[in-house]
Image 1 (spheres, rainbow, N blue to C red):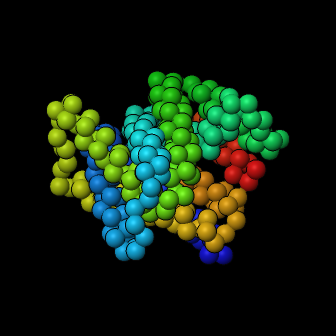
Image 2: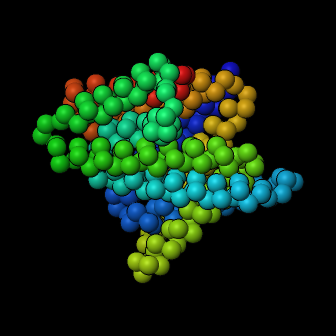
Amino acid sequence: MLAMLLALGASLAWGASDFLGGWQSRSLPLLTVLLATQSTSVVLLVVAVAGRAAGPPDVSYVVAGAGAGLAELAGAAALYRGLAVGRMSLVAPIAAAAPAVPLVAGLVLGEVPGPAQSTGLVLIVAGIAFASRARGSAGRVGPSIAYGIAAAIGFGVFFVAMDAASEGGLLWALLVARLTALAAIGTAMAAARSGPAIRRTDLPVLVVTGVLMTAGDAMYAAATTVGYLGVVAVLAALHSVVTIGLARILLHERVAAWQQIGIAGCLTGVAVLAVA
């Protein structure tokens, strides 16, 4: 029961964080949103790591954590941008297909997925194809799908790299990843010669977004230690449903019938991969 509650909590936190991040990206520069949310996460993780006696991990784990941070940053940037300029109800389920990335990578390397994994991949691909069949709003559908796929790739690579980095300690892995992402954001802003353009009224929402993102990570990690990974992964994958629901309720987004079928296909494929 505890694992289920933690996994559901993670899905709620991630889904709300994704919605808020995308929503803020509609009125603020993307780098500003990323800077604020990642900075909030770093502060929380520094406090968490300071409360533990374990020392820093070996260099190999640090390198893996840094790679995970860059991949997650790329995924988050694509997700927020897609949620800002596209349809949240399309971007979110496609981005949730991130677990398929490690399977595709294995397939390229000669690994053969099992029947359940193959079924999940087919459902995701079919779901994306159905979601792209929209009429009347095609201008927003194309970017929605493109950014959703880019986000899925970024998060998928993050899962692979974080799995290796976590062997040196989960909190340290998350902290290294977020510090690397923060350094990359700072470098990008310096190169663009642009400073953070945060209005005082926007700061609370950005901080809440960072807190929710970190809380989701923590609850998911805790759930995997006390429950079955397959069950936890399925429940946590509901975060895209939360984002879709918030977009429908608060932004009044309409979803065509073909797109509803595509969304259902993507979410079903994610669930199949999670239990495979």
